Image 1: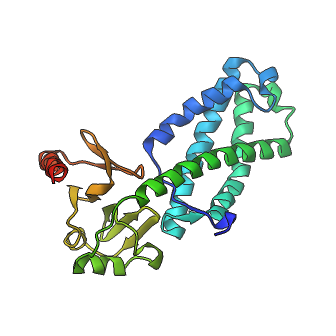
Image 2: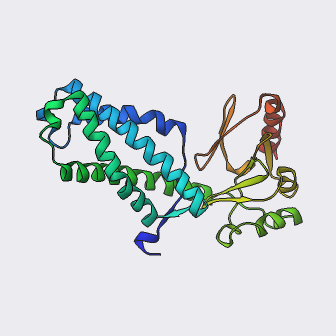
Image 3: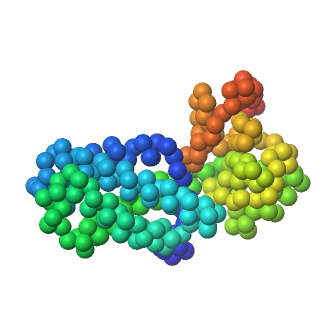
Amino acid sequence: MSFFTFRSAPVLPWRALLSLPFIGVIIGLIGPFGSYSGMSVAERIGHFALCVTLIGAASLIISYAVARRFFQGYWPLWAALLVDLALAVPGAAVVFLSLRLIVPAVADHLQAEHLLWQTLLLALVFRSVSLLVSWRRIRDGGQVEAPAQPAEPASDLRAKLPRTLRTQPILALTSEDHYLRVHTPKGEALIHMTMAEAIAGLPHGFQVHRSHWVAGTAIKSAGADRVELVTGLSVPLSRHRRKAFDAWLDAAAAA
């Protein structure tokens, strides 16, 4: 596998989105790209918090959408870099408009090429962090044990998956209208199958919501209304299924 074909599986956790303003504040306190001397602390914090939030959210959302739409959720590095490159111009525009709003005097002396490379540099830093987190999710998800010999319905399910995912452990299922999204450590696939048909051959799991099923070995933690998997995927836990889910967890732990 070459460097540019290294694959990762981006997700869209709400915690990552909520952390963006705080990351912007930290960057503002550091004051990169000469902003330390040209802007006050308050101006730097406001500027970077706004830019990191807007550009970071756009990058996360677009990356997640592109990976799911064109690469079954498991995309190569070259595609991620193309997204970063495509976002450089609108990102630079966001930076310019933010400076124009917060410190017009600084915006008047900026050069377009400087904005572009600075925006692209920050995008590459964030992409590196994203790849590291994704690699850890794939590694942890890969440690989930797959059934030794799936039943016939599960075999039907796997036959509908792309060849690269057929041997992967099935971590979770998500119902989307008349389709089913199958989550594995190395990507996702959208197949035409009902939830009932799929889980009939996957006994080692629990349907935590009418639209979500999770594999028992893939569960990392369970809260009052959410279940988090080892890959970072978080799915809702139905209130009326909570008691049965707790009993199922206790039984699985005792087995």
